[in-house]
Image (cartoon, rainbow, N blue to C red; front, side, top):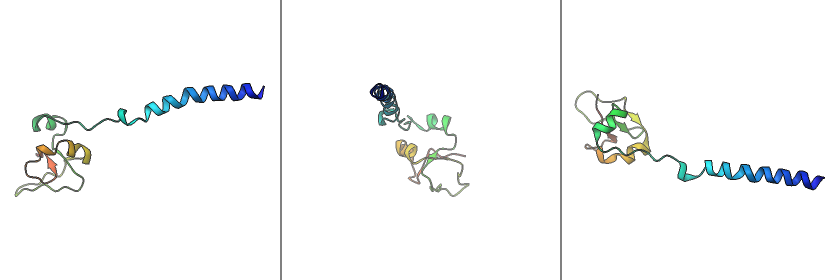
Length: 91
């Protein structure tokens, strides 16, 4: 009787473990989106995207309400023309 209970528990574990491993696999993790240009990026992030702690380089009004996300910035760093840590910044 005890061996049947153990077998039932092991069968249940065998069904649950692969499902939880599949949910936690790195392949399922969403990679940050790379945008083709600033027009496409600004449709989703109207004020640009930058690294946490980045400060806008400008002689006018500084953009402060950009999206702060290091991974998203890294994926779109090619669009950071002034190399201030904020891609596609605009007011």
